[in-house]
Length: 281
Image (cartoon, rainbow, N blue to C red):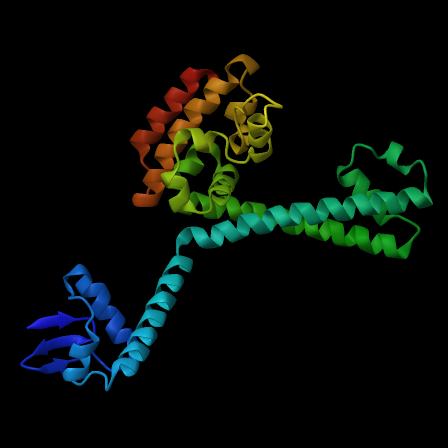
């Protein structure tokens, strides 16, 4: 008996796996490399397709169905939604900053001393905008505050989701930093394949290109600088802390990708090694 993607051929008769393209796809995935090379003439002789055109039409439908299944499987990964959440969080920060900058300029037209009085920003800044004599500006201030609250809720959700998707990476650097590393890498599988040196400078794209052009020294850290172990470390040991932390993050990402569960033994040893490098503030 000869086995092809379109069915089993024995005695000149073909037994197809089913009638819909999904059945053929399941057969291809189950059989894998054990299937024989596609043969349009054999398919015609055993009655699967009337001619070469019909064979190619069926093959196209099967390939399209397999592609749809592959895309659906890729989008069903646990890190895909987290990646979109992080990107939405970054966009929210961008929108809030743009609106706040525009609102400050608007308020400065009404009160020229406003930018000097409220230079420190924060709630004092948005609160003053909310009390502006301009109804339109007060509305903008209300929207900025609402966006800020939404951003805070989303940040908490990102951290919570990262703890589930990246348990070991989150345990080392916190949910938000872990999620940003994953998003910058393009996904958990991409992060897991990265060497420690690449993880160390993730997010420092501008500094890397400046270094390549010879206009700046090589960057010592990227996103991981947001973590207290790096930015609270003394300047003279900050690079070493970043290297050690990145090395442990590379291992943590692989454990998260292939196991998906916290590894208490690894985390305990990693924390000791990072502390020894000078990262314990």
